[in-house]
Length: 401
Image (cartoon, rainbow, N blue to C red; front, side, top):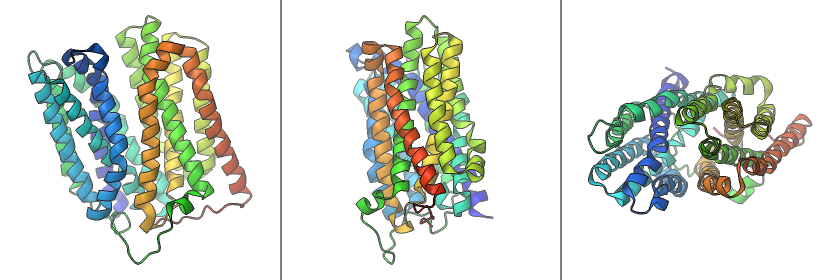
């Protein structure tokens, strides 16, 4: 069986379990924090701990998998996530706020490893299939749109007087299921993040001077940052405009679907149209989201805007990740992928943590106007890259194995 047929479904399943757990975490963390914290201002501290730990663990996760291999790292991370889920359930039952914050940090650490699923898939496949492989991994997130929120609702009262504790026990089972799937991986040598002393390794600054690397980094960080900022501010904006929780849940669920469902065909679109056009379409979809948000605050406006925002993220993130795989040799992938993900998830963390304050201080319209420069920079980078690739003035030949 080819690596594509064997490994991609396993990695996609693990991605689905990770995103389902993250979806439940996003749904429940602030509510649990509000119930457990003595100070209401600390209600979002657990979610902040999850984001920050993902950011801080991105580089150590890459370093560890460089030493022990990706398969071992992924399985280890699943047990870290399961430990965090058990600690979260215990902390809710015991009323231990800081225990719950620590549990959220462990779950965020797991996610730092899980964010490399897409690279493991890309490095398992030939160059012409990398975009498709990355797309299929992220397509696993479609399940998360249904599993996470529904699991939060169904498990809310499993353990009396401890809302959501049962949900985190269910999350533990998701992580263990992912560990079982990941243990079946058979990654080819070029996908295992093992050191290779026979191949020259360029300094990171030399790699970063490549136009393809810079465009990939710009589009991934800004695309993900815009999505995180607008998505996080949307529930607050909908509440401000007197929309109820069911309407907000409806909008967010469609947003998550729009983030991941296009993954079923994004890889094929990259094969047909090329990476630059996909990046351009992603940036344009983000600008269309802003236009819709600026023209109304009905449920229909929020729904249409968040669907466009999800599509924008999908095209920019998958396109940028595929482009990044052209920028490194096999011996360089650990450092390049780690530097990329550290930059991306630093931006995500800052965007998520600042969204509430920006919405409160400046309002919905200025939040949307504020992301326009970020989208214009991504669009400009993609247009520049498209022109130079068409004129054959920059090198885009694959370097990764």
